[in-house]
Image (cartoon, rainbow, N blue to C red; front, side, top):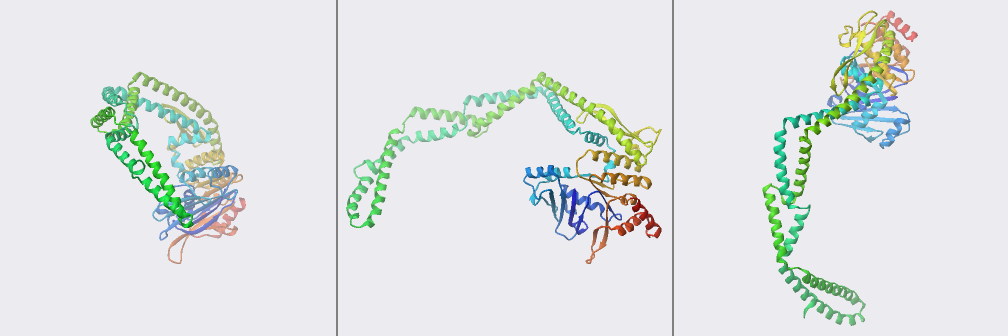
Length: 550
């Protein structure tokens, strides 16, 4: 669960730390006081998008730290990625600079946004105040059904098969439409491949030919130079080796009289050995160098043919093998693309695979829709919509990435009324209750320990507001629930109540303050939520009654 949230220089919060508790936590405050700022800060810590507007005016950076207590499953996830910290605890930190750049850390280790988001999905489930509007869209309703029923892997497989089928269909259409152009391209490439493959130029061969050509072209000079060097070093009448030998003959006896000459003697002996070895190597080299005019002529012809092909196709000679491989690969693609019958067969097979998977998904969705209808209807009864019910209908649609059915939620607001699409519900309160009922059901099937409702109760009041508060309090019995609300009936039922307000700082800036309320402070806050500009004893008495009833 979320243990603490620390904010520094975030939007209008200069410095605040909020310690959260288990159970049902409520955040309330005047409109514009910054209640949802806390949710925005938490979203940033969980990998949300950052920009310069996150930084308080005049500050150089915003700093958000969220502390969670976690179970062994999350602990293993952290350990596998070398992000582990203290047992049972994870610290998420996000730093946003004034220029909009940001950095992320998990337990002090630098982290990617993808890691934060993946970790966040295991820690928090957020139902925002805009969820009602997104629920009006058919794709959101279908995605919600898949999420509640655990059908996302099946839906992803159907989408993958649809992409595969559409890609093959486009290839088939191109083959049928552009057959003449593809045939001309294939003819041109076949001619080019024939020219290049006829050279049989292996990778690296051009370099080897250049080395050999240079050696054969200069063979006479190489032999003459090597022989002269060998004679000068060790094989002539007056050689370097004989000179060194003469010097050693004179120095060795003298070294017996003075040990200081032993070092030079040793060096000269080593030099004599190396000079003699060099002379022998030069002599052998001179004997091996081949004066082969026929081989030189053969290499000249080979290099001329390669140069000619390179000029014809505007290539560097050494690039010919790679170009040939590219041409051959494209020819293989064209051969497959021009085989219209084979392409049509592959497209038909892909469509059959898609159709089978899509129909299995359709059957699974329809099977999951009935219990979901029952559950949402039951919750609606408990949220003040007596006689209201939800129906999930399916209409066939052409093959799409989402499947072969269009899914739509219909709602009847009261007994005897005809179910209508959510988008045609006149009452915002009814839409809020439907959205909340679905969110609660989705949350019950989600193992995350912390649920957050950001003004998900907008548009309702009175007895329905109390029913919503009771529902959230029940949710808070086995997990942590955080709710941003403007309803006193909901706030009074919370286990813990935080108030968010604005105040003027000594330097004239407006800053946000978050306070955990005690019993008497809760009376005043609930009375404020109940009353108007002036809080009376009557509103305070009503607030005490609400809190006592909770």
